[in-house]
Length: 366
Image (cartoon, rainbow, N blue to C red; front, side, top):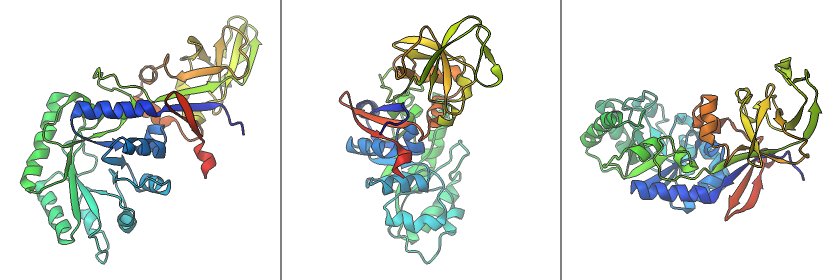
């Protein structure tokens, strides 16, 4: 069956390369963050690839993301970084999922009749992010006592850097390790560094890094490690025509041809996550840049070309000539935001050893 020809290419070799570069650079164990559908790269394919490369944990944001991976057959270590309703604790234990504990109040809401002896947790310490986590030593000690009494496996403890400059990281690590030391507890895992912290800061006391966007080849601190982009995005021309001087293109007639010109239509739009702010940016055909003209529509958009290109001509939206970081800068967005915009309307084509090994259209798997 022929699908709409708009697709992301996910290079699994680049993913493996980045994982191993990060592991070598940090000299630590690696927790791999695969939240938000692995930053739009596809959660199960990415999780399996990273686990097969030696990832110590796959980390997700929520219970539904954890369930997604378990339902698709991922059986490796899995840590939820965000809030989970206490009603889900039994499901978590039965499916060997590790939880983050971030408050005593949350713990007290767990049904007292539930046997927690099979529960594994990491304690989340807030050292300045002010999102979730425990800030006081007193609360942390109360949580440790509560968990010990119920024979919970207290496996790890962690915090999250809000910035990656030396001063901020030093301040947060001092706060964090003051709590860790006062706990006098033998934690198996101690982790602080996100992608930026892993690439730009060395926390000498932790034994794991918790890396997200760097795995996907996006170097947010310009570390010069040579990370390779994993994600590229392409579409193909569906219609090509010549318009006359004075004619308009797309909604509200915001673009008017100043001369006779060629226009090509592409099957991608803001309904796919390719937002209207892309109007005026450039896409590529055979390495040549062509402007997006008129308002980007929900499902389609138009570009101004130098000739009539045949239907089926491939167009690069993100790739070798249009890096994601460049796109993010032009949109005045973070690369995190740009990646997470792309949704399951876009087919994923997984590449390994230079060839496409499978096409995955997630909406057709339901």
